[in-house]
Each structure stands twice: as structure tokens, then as C-alpha cells.
Length: 140
Image (cartoon, rainbow, N blue to C red):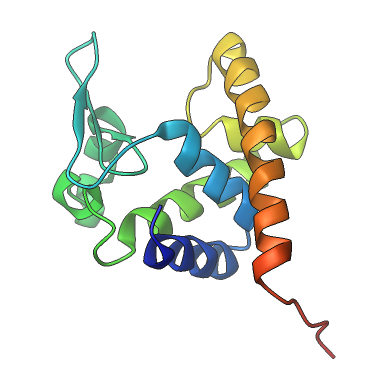
């Protein structure tokens, strides 16, 4: 991930009140890329760096959100939309934080469990990286 992508993810996590290590871990697990469209066996596609499914994106069309909007990190929008989605899962989901974040991928308990395990591994790495590269000052 580029420095610009990392900064986009951190800004989106702050804006939407989600853990930066969690959002960065989702990015890493999704393993998408700029301009990437990956076809699924059910005929849908996963789009861009955050691998938004076109079936999910169809539900957002009423808000003017199109697949083309999330296919590139050029304007940080994929991270903003992913952080918004994760925030909603955190607020309305069940289970611990990582289970709620894992619902980004699926609502299937078996898939959530597998995704959660991968998230935790990647989030630990991102947390160490963030602690090494950023200073957080307490608010007053």
C-alpha cells in the first residue's frame, strides 16, 4: 500500500470512528488493487482496493454511489466508504469488535470466523506499524 493510501485509510478511520488497524487489516485481507474487478462465481464482481461487491454497490446506487467510484484510491473514496460500512457493522452488529468488523466480508458465520482470524493477524502488524510511525497525543 502506498503512503497516500495509508493516509487515506487513517483519515477515513478517524472520520468514521473505526480502528485504523482494523480498516488497514480489511484492506490487506481483501487484497484488491486500483482498477481491479474480480469476477465471483455468482456473476458479481469485487471492485477496487477494498473489493466492494457489485451486488452491495447496487444497493447504494440510490445514493449516487457507482462501482467506478470505488475502483481506485485516487480520491480516497474507497476507504471512506469502507470505514462508513465498518462503522455501521460496529454499531449494529453482534459479537466482539473483530467479529463485527469481519461482517464487512460476509454475514455467513463460517466465513466471518475465517475472515476474523485473518483480520486479527493483519491488524496486529498494522498496530505495530502505526505505533512506530505515528505519535498520538491525548486530547484535553
